[in-house]
Structures are given as C-alpha cells and as structure tokens.
Image (cartoon, rainbow, N blue to C red):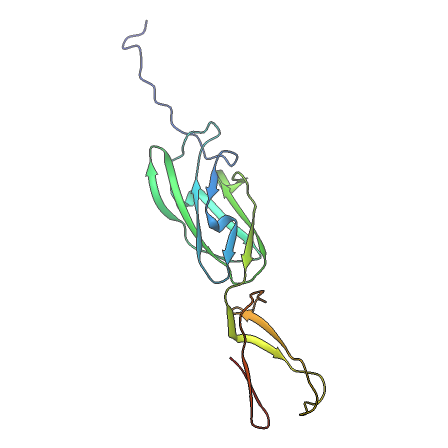
Length: 176
C-alpha cells in the first residue's frame, strides 16, 4: 500500500454537452409580438453532471433576427448553473431559435433549434388600414370597405375586434 492511501478523489464536471443540456420556458416556443419572454438554460456534461459556469457558457441566435438580450445568471450552485435569456420579436412569423453550448459553442442543446411561433399583438387602430371601395361613393349605392386590422408592429391580426366607423361631411370617414 502507498503511504497515505486511500486517497480522496474529487471528480468535477466536464465541458457542457449539447445532448444533455436543456432549455425551458415560453421563449423557446411562443412569443407575442413586442412582448419580452424568457427561457431558462441548464448546462450538463455528457455524463449528466451539472456544469458550473457563467452566461458565456451559452450562445443563442435566431432566424429571422430577433432581440436576444444578455444572459442573466440566476443560480450557480452544486446542481449547476441556471441562466435566463430574454427574447423579444416584433414580426409575426415563425422563428428558428438556435441555442448552443460548450467549447466554441459547437453543440446544439437538446431540442435546438427550436421553432418559436410569434403571434401578433393586440389590434392597433393606428396601424390598421381601410381599403377604400372601388368606384365612386354615392348616396344610392352600397359599398363595402375592408378593414385590414394590424398590431402596433403592422402584423396582420386575426382578432374579432369590434370596429366602429363614422361618416361625416362630404369627404370624411373615421375608424374608431
């Protein structure tokens, strides 16, 4: 036997691995246009050991481009690092959100890239438009105009909002 044996051995976590690291939260699945959402990231090595670290352990990108805020370290404990990343989109389209981890950010985390559905916000009268009727408006002819409802970022909305209209004077028409 060697002098001083048995020896105490401490095994630390290896580098973060994409296959065992994960994200959760509304920011990886659905966003409302103009409203910030967040998602939580947790890093683990290939053996499932929590990897302590900093927000720089992760990298996030999106196509088309959206606002991805700075990562916020919320916990660095024996059970690993928890990082929150805020995201915000203004275009009502589906987004591909890639979250990578590890050395050189080469590995996607489990489930990445995520398809994030961005839904339009509330209807904005200021951003909505009225499609004028074809032809001349007369007192004896009924015409139909279409209101194209849009949110504050000009995304078409599908809301069943109540619209009001008023006609006054010779040439005025107002949406309420």
